[in-house]
Image (cartoon, rainbow, N blue to C red; front, top):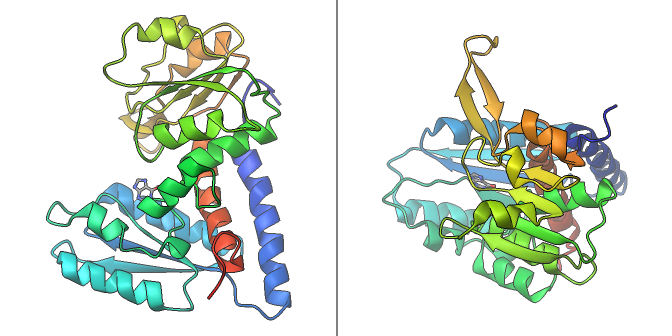
Length: 295
Ligand code: GUN
């Protein structure tokens, strides 16, 4: 095995085994299997794929999953009624509302109607606020998965310079908060579209997290020799030579950056599989009342 590559598939399989053992133990003790629900509004192709893989992952660890498929013309009130139903259903431990929502629905209003104790995506203001305060909360799946990758790959973070590319609410901003926490103790620079001298800042990074949403954006000249490179990008690129007709590439120019990095996450098979496993970890915590006590 090439130990330069941070194998997200291998690490996520290991975590899945740990989750499956905990689920089996709950069932042995007469408790119901943790139950994750997903709500999907409309026919967005990528959303359908994400939700199917979340369902498959649930079943692979013995959890229950259900999917609420609502038509694209669903009104905001109808969706809020579904949220209320899910908040009150004692059989559902946690749920997600797959984003994006159709334009006529106020995403913020719907997300913040989710009961924080069932918000396994960690998207409600309560969970986001608690994350910033360092209080127990549901951490969004992608940053949580990256933290697991870093810990389980034995990457030293104390006093290291971390550069995060991209300030999204789902990835970049929580990533910056988590890496600067006590115990992790990195010094974080959060970069965005208005950052000046970006290549120069990237070259200072001991750990570079690319979540910028541009395929192949990070080139070898932007990476310090020996740096750890985490690629969050997922881009489907047409490729007539591949059996599926496309290939998946990240935000990093993998072949060139591989030569200078000390460790790197591949795409696919790096951060992606960790994201789904993090959602399962959050669902398990919800079912066990680990973040918010069960009612
Ligand atoms: N759309 C893209 N990523 C996500 C995610 O992590 N959660 C939800 N709910 N929707 C998404």
